[in-house]
Image (cartoon, rainbow, N blue to C red; front, top):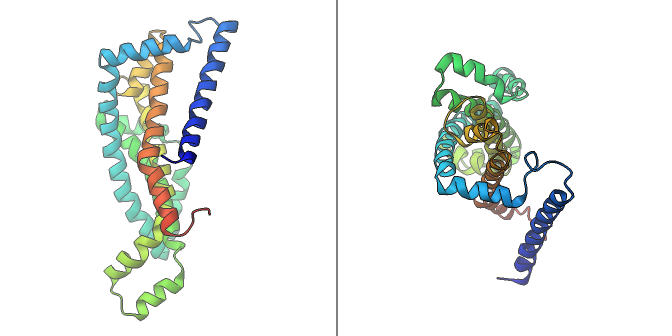
Amino acid sequence: MSFSSLFRLARVFFFYAALLGIWQLVIEVELWPRYIFPSPGAVWDSFRTNIENGQIQRSLEISLKRLAIGYSISFVIGMTVGVAAGTIRWVDETVGSLVLGLQSLPSVTWLPLALLWFGLNDQAIIFVVLMGSIFAISISARDGVRNIPPLQRRAAQTFGAARWQMVRYVMLPGMLPSMAQGLKLGWSFAWRSLMAAELLYISGGIGSLLNIRRELNDMSGVVAVMLVIVAIGIVVDRIIFGPLEHWVRDRWGLSQA
């Protein structure tokens, strides 16, 4: 491991160590009662207890399954709509304008409609996840198509590229810089939509576990579950979207020297 990598790891370690120190300092000065603002030790004990009894693992398995289904569907539909809006004018003027309008609608507002359509089940939550992420993916796909230089398209047509070759060798590679950010935004919207939906009724997911801890006035459990939700977001970004963005920057010469 290089010196720069070790330095970055040390910097991150000391940053989080400082946060824990500040947290513990606030506990020591007793600004708030500990049943309202728990200590790091109490949160760790709650986390360990929920790991040992399997509640966090079971809840994460349910939530991640819902997320994978909803996000996968939103990716397929969002890419289709976005590419169509980016290449066909009348689609952009009709469906594209609707997508832009619906993007401003908070995803949790789809939950009442989902409950009326599907009832209290996984389909309702998956629908909310779908509606939370599909518009960000669609808009990114449309912008990605529009940002492809016209010269590249004309060059491919000059060399006799068929429609599928245009898509394979011009459109899809040209969309990647915009899509890398769009997929990340779609994931973050999907994850937040999932948590919002699971918080509103008992559904077995990690958001539902957070609500149960709240109803039991277990503040240590609430903070522990919140930290798990944050950790999942960081891990997914570091494992999936971080390498994807790094590859796109290197592939298109966008990395800083």
